[in-house]
Length: 93
Image 1 (cartoon, rainbow, N blue to C red):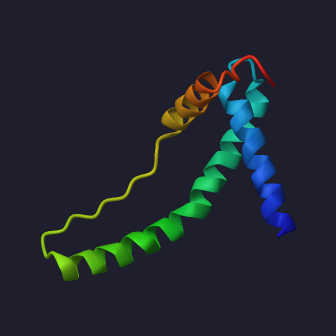
Image 2: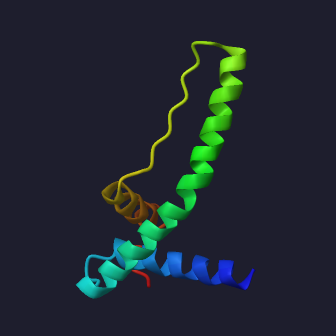
C-alpha cells in the first residue's frame, strides 16, 4: 500500500513538471522516465483486458471490432495543460 502511494505522488509530481514550460531539462527527463514507467506498468493489464473483451465480443458479434491504444506523450502533456486551464490552475504551483 505504501509503495502505491509513493508511486502516485511521483506520478503527480511528474505531471506537474511535464506541464510547466519552465521546468529544467533534467526534471523533464526524470518526469518522462516516470511517465514511461507508468505506461509500461499499465500495458500488460490493458492488453489482458483487451484480449478478454475481444473474446467476449466475438461471442456476441463475429464482426465485432476491438481496438486499443496508448496516448502519445505530447497528447498527455497537452491534456495536463488543458486540465489546468479548465480549472484555473495555470498560475498556481
